[in-house]
View 1 (spheres, helix red, strand yellow):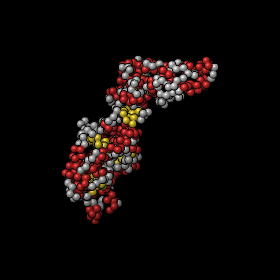
View 2: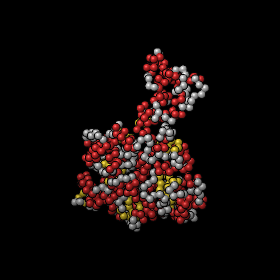
View 3: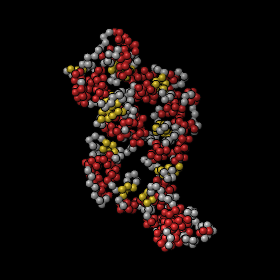
View 4: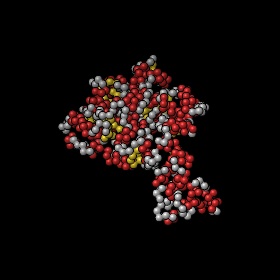
Length: 625
């Protein structure tokens, strides 16, 4: 280091500044605030020559201790030299040296972020500084500009009421009068409505809306559950049908009425759901082969009328309400205006060909014999015998079945449930793909309930085995529950686990040796326990005995629990999760989830932190924070 006139450079920058060496005066002039042009004029050389001299001096310099602890403040924050000196107690030479030697990050944070987390000022002092600069700290702890869109977000979050454009304005005016010396800017209803639509809101009918806490990505965690809502026969439905079909899911998603559900689907995008075609006026839902056009809609209603040949029109309207949640007034109006030729004095007259020969019904009894069919399945069977015959209520009765709306049940069964139990529990296997083809919520829900009761056991992604078949191997239903109890005895209450993680920890059971199925089988059995909750990721993550508040655990809860250190490299963390739990969590998904959790993530450090303060202390090495 002889170029600086010493054998060894000092550890601190302040000591370095006292050294005398060739062109040291040029560097000091620059550090004291002179421009390149001003220094060049003094020395009689160009500004470019001055820049080269300064770079040759600072480029070889090592990291000085007092520079190292302060450099990130200058490179990461929009900080003036005055602010730097004021809040660090350092001087402008240090500030200017850092600006010369180190590149700033691509997106610098405002200085207020530093003030908020440094602990050097109270929250009240920070609020005063922010108010002077036209900013404030929002409910998420972010520093944002004092502009109308951000105020709208605060009012929606704070009050959680159902608003329309008229009723929200007084709240916005109150917020401005309380927090700002400025008046609320004049804004048209249309502009304000557009602003609100971009906030975290859920829309209702007639222009009403309210704050909604979940992002689209968070809702899509429940895509599989939402998808099952549409496992119904093709047709036109009232949106209430889907809302009422799974109230528990609606509560988890904080959806409070059917029109909110309709708008949620619109926000997510209909294309994300295989069988959902369209939702019209937040009320009529078009499913499967029934599209939102006149011919498709008329074909659907015509098939219903065929079913009610000879019956009063009021029965049709009641059937549509009971089975499709279409309001009776709406149904009567549509049928009366589009199918008046088939309605005589309030009675449906379709003039169908009804078979009166015994040969047809003998053939029908040979192929129509199971305890239950969906209406579409039965209709196809009838058409295979005589394509001119429609499956009307009269044909159903004469075939020895009862009409149950979307399905027909053999007359010797009292309920749909008893018919499904007879159909499935007397078979060796039930195939998932066949149940899905029924597009029946009733069928799907019954299948799920039979799995929970271990009358059907899911052995792989396609097949369920009946308990009757299962017990032929010498394994009883009680053995299944004993196995689940073994698992729950092995894990700790409140701890997340997967089948992979407990196997890695040494779990084993004689039940595994006796049954010899793939991992899917045992994993699925665990999910049937009423004592565990699940997080749906690539594989299921379980937690035992913590569902006290009826809130479904989230991926961020799992991450928070497994982050057993204050900070960790995210790639190392994901590798640890894969090794311990067998989960391949997408990095981008985890980063997105962290935004709505108490945890923090720094893209610059590529680390997850237990909280925001820990992140800032790590970034700025704890000496100024």
